[in-house]
Length: 98
Image (cartoon, rainbow, N blue to C red; front, side):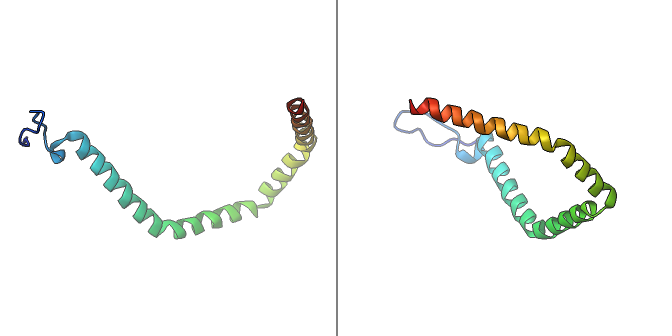
């Protein structure tokens, strides 16, 4: 390990490149930048693959029937929850206005 010359306080500290924490941070930042750049380059192609797979699944008749059934069976529950949220928000608004 190399040391810098003693400073005004007389302390001798290792140089930044010798500090293991700085090496870790530098490596981490470098890895993140490289990963981001490589991901951005392949990102649009991968996004298109995911969208195509999603559309293929959604167009399946079994999946469509199942989602329709789930939507119909939860319609009343969702409407009730929405009404409860609206009435609760109105009550909070009225109390806050007092």
